[in-house]
Length: 160
Image 1 (cartoon, one colour):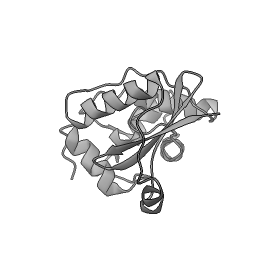
Image 2 (cartoon, rainbow, N blue to C red; image 1 turned 135 degrees about the vertical axis):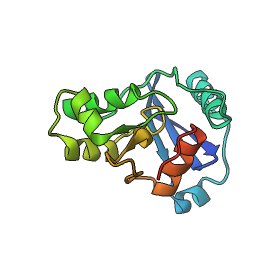
Image 3 (tube, rainbow, N blue to C red; image 1 turned 180 degrees about the vertical axis):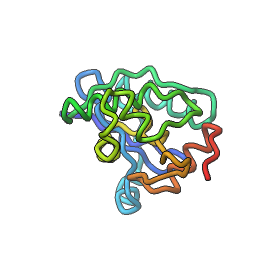
Image 4 (cartoon, rainbow, N blue to C red; image 1 turned 90 degrees about the vertical axis):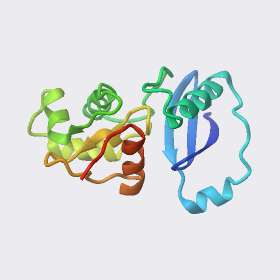
């Protein structure tokens, strides 16, 4: 049974899930879900307290990487390989979908990379927001392009 914590971030309320000592989910709540979660509670476990602290440092521009244990709650081996490759993208840098396809040894899987990004269950800790189009434009984002732009700007990345 997951333990859920809601973190009020500059991009909206993040729902963080912990299961068996691992972060298994980070997602941005919709506006309607935010209204329902307006009464935010403090983090209930040591790991969620660490997540709160590290996210606070990240959004303050004081942290460039996360050291929290994560575990994917679902996904195919292909998706796991994509998500692991995303974790290798340094703070303040971007990669194209094609770059990720090459990195995992499957250069023709560009569209599948996009689909795997869309299904990423651990937002921010697995930084799918750092993947952009080959031509340097921002591309899509499951949480909205505005959120992606804000996260990239926070990291000092300016996109067309």
